[in-house]
Length: 213
Length: 294
Image 1: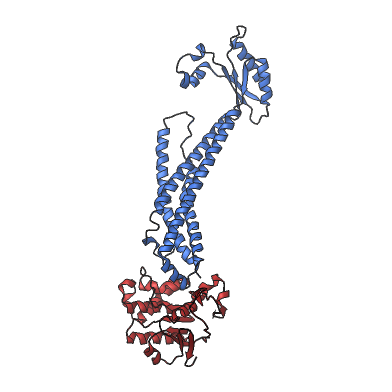
Image 2: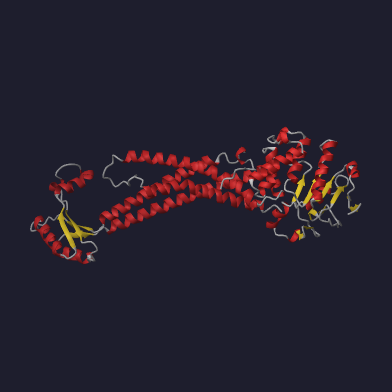
């Protein structure tokens, strides 16, 4: 996969994630983790090779079908990518509104989830007034609110304390238990060692999976 | 059409701030143009209806001593009144001719001092198929200097004039619509550039192009409707002032500035038309831009 013909970022990567599996993705900076994640959450189409998600060859999938597939994927961005003009509540509600969920259902679910991640008192707060840890929790809430089939998280515990980090991982585990396939990209070896999940390792041209896939 | 939630902060950036003002000017110009077109059209219709079923016989003044003006008039009247299809033939009195010529020749007994032709106002039976060319020839042979005017020259020119005004009016409205659409394209592109990151995020979390376009559409429509209503109000006020100015010019050939209920309905549709054009333009612009995304 590359951004142009002579700018190849990923090569020779071949893996299959079982539905309902939980994986870590790790590797040094610049190894291509973010590019791999972008392929997984359909921000890019690969310039070569085959990417199959939800049993669809993405290269051959019509553009009009992609939004429906994206709604089945929850993404936690490393830089949060919250909308500064919207409240925490509306940021989390965004994916549900896009999916045309009823407003009363949205209100109930969003309030409950924000309460769960410890932001029950910040429902109307705008992102610029939140700490990095709080922003990260809003971003996670937005990613999981739609109960996605695939959750892709880029350094989801990077800005929170250890206690919140473990709570967030428990949330991901709960989602995983109800069938969500989870991929967590992280540099945090300690976090990886705390959980017994297979690790995809990407290191400048080499790719391997350790642990039970 | 309007969403309860705007995920895109379109109202908070400056991209569309000028749109209502430009649309207001556009709708103002369109209002005046359409009103002028309709007023001229009504006047042409009125003149046309006024001339329909009438012809005028003109008997030129003659210097020949043998010819008596009264005799020629009597002969012409007799011939006309005996013609099948003629409802009435009434000589136009000298004082009426004086009144008609007053704007050019001033007051006084003009017909007595100048060789002014005598006129006969001829009314035809409704739906008559009278051969006016034959009648004209017959009249000219029977009464030297008599000429029948069926007003065709004037009605054709009036009709041409009315059509020209209508075409010009439609052309102005089309230009205004084009300029309005251009404004919306510019504002929408600016909005797309300003909110690129937000749009990309919405795209990544599964937003359809139509969802994003819908927000731009609603915003463009709201701005255009606001501008359109202001433009219509200004146009209506201008028409009111023009009507006040034109009122004292009684009996002139000036088009009447009176706006009928139908005309008001047409004018009231202009802001809606502006809103519709803005909506469609914004949608097409956004959908085209979003196609560049994967």
